[in-house]
Length: 435
Ligand SMILES: Cc1cc2nc3c(=O)[nH]c(=O)nc-3n(C[C@H](O)[C@H](O)[C@H](O)COP(=O)(O)OP(=O)(O)OC[C@H]3O[C@@H](n4cnc5c(N)ncnc54)[C@H](O)[C@@H]3O)c2cc1C
Image (tube, rainbow, N blue to C red; front, side, top):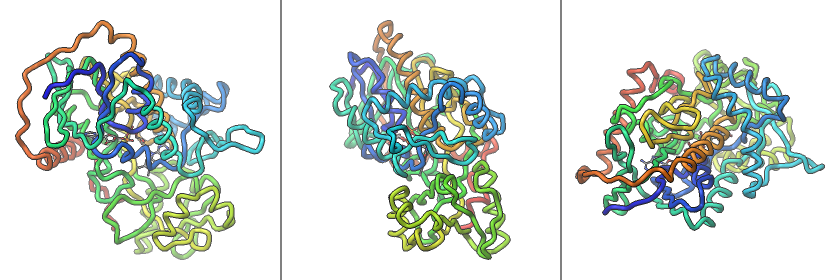
């Protein structure tokens, strides 16, 4: 079956949906996702979204981002991220997102590792869920945006280094979608790891497509390990993240002898290394995170989701330390894009975690990724809005996909693994092999 749209967006996380919402309402937009619309890393985000505290904060915010990223960042992209942060947060608020506020009505800003000041807006500890819900709700009210859930993106359709559409499988049927612009918003790669905080379905499908079509990649070896995922040796699902904001609000890491061993607010890679060293030295597969001093009432109110999730796993965080250990968390690399999220292939955009704008450098500053998803997907939408009237739908001969989905998916996984390894990335990093 053939289908024609103006814009096809693959992915229903923050970057896919926000891109869709910033496209002109006279464009016919199709968003597709592998699972249900809310099965995204976006939905899992806890801590919040970074935003500059006014124009005067921009230089310090840039410096914090560069320092965390070991100065491997793209400085121009970081300037764009920070200077457009306030406007995008305002747009989210206008869409209906109710960030936590102080008694006087002003936004409540929290702090996370490697930020010099409090500059993270949040809704308690479930910012991802509330952001996703607002975006989904807005999308439902837009007549020009259709969403296909449980729809598998297989490949793009290419003609002479121009992307003219994509091949999808929905209800066992192949759909060749022809689009004037295609946006990949396929998220990260955590599903390739046994030990990750990510949704299991996210296996770098966008990266696999890029490799097959010689589309440029960037920083593929930069994979972030989060120091504090809930330690649970029985689990074969995603690991529960224990947000950085617990350390931001004074949470202390101690080894099994009760000794502190690191400044908890150093960048994630430094804290992860320190935790792993303790794990090795003490021959115990976890360290302890203690937030009991915050008091029961405060913890249950401020960290309600983490409190509930830990309780389900047998730990009352108001009375006990939380056993934590590192886990794969975020992919800084991805499909190389310019400041408008355009890839090296014409009419093909990449946004969010599947893309590499270069803003994270070698290590992401906490809460910069939801913001990246907002800022750069809106830029993609703006460029598409201005150029699309000059583009026509094209068609091509597309072969029938005759392999089972599972086989295709395994082949893609292999391709992504091999690409990461060949570029020096570690998939079975020793930080991850302690379980
Ligand atoms: C536990 C956790 C906590 C986090 N906390 C924070 C935080 O506090 N602040 C912050 O800034 N960041 C946080 N992050 C990171 C942030 O959530 C993600 O980087 C961001 O949400 C990624 O958004 P995205 O739009 O790129 O992709 P996602 O939200 O992951 O969405 C990916 C989409 O791609 C679709 N997809 C993938 N492959 C295919 C395919 N083959 N066919 C069809 N569809 C496909 C999926 O179905 C999904 O809809 C956290 C991440 C995790 C895992």
